[in-house]
Amino acid sequence: MNSTLSITIIQPNLYWENKTANLKMLEGKIFSIKEKTEVVVLPEMFSTGFSMKPEPLAETMEGETVQWMKKVAQKKNIILTGSMIIKEPAPPLHHVERGPGGEVFFNRLIWMQPNGQYGMYDKRHCFAFAGENEHYTPGSKRLIASVMGWKINLQICYDLRFPVWSRQTPPLRRMERGSGGEEYDVLIYVANWPERRSHAWKTLLQARSIENQCYVIGVNRVGKDGNGIYHSGDSMIIDPVGEVLYSKKDEEDIFTTTLDKNYLNSIREKFPALKDADRFLILNDDED
Image 1: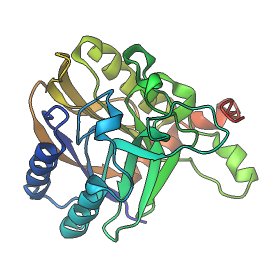
Image 2: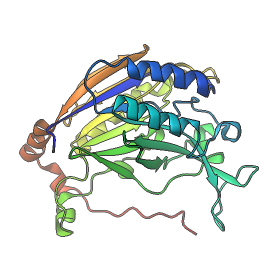
Image 3: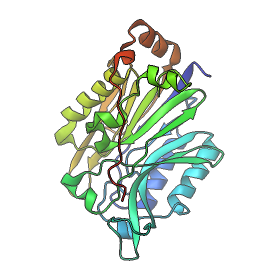
């Protein structure tokens, strides 16, 4: 286990529904990173912006953007993560929105390792206010990745408003199952969160860190999207007691931070609030 973990966050101004331009721009930013880093985090739908046109924009898991992530992660020797629009054949007998070719679409986060292996997380909470639920299928499983002894819970944008989905399972419950310790150490949200609701974004990121006694990282975009909606960024890195270690508003930025496991453990040991947390079970009510 490493006592530290270096993470770089990239806050870009995305080109609207222009995959080629976005991948070229982001590749330049990634390879400009001079500091030692283990993980690089991109925003939600980093190759297109937050588009409700999955039919012309979606790719398969063998498509260009996933292959780009593999190439960049290997060449830079990093873990690269962010979400994109993915299509898959619709499972039989499931009542989900389907494209004209019978496919289903996901807002899918990829956790790409330098050896080409990857994890996946499909956004659980589709943003109905923008019609995301009419085009994309919600996920049903969380992804908690592991890197050098650190456990990282990966979520997407609107998930931030639903604290049960990110809530740490009480440690004692897992100790009874033989694992012990907190469920995760870092909670990452990748987003296209508009400036008009930036107060909620900043407040909820801090709340998630305090209630889960973990580092929280929120990575957002800046600039106007194709619908004229302005994004102020406000990407943040927050420590386990809710203190803001980094925040950037309105400007593109690349920032690397080093998280400290000893500090995290000392917070949990001095104030073990999670041991008093309510026990609960999340039921998936989407199954037929």
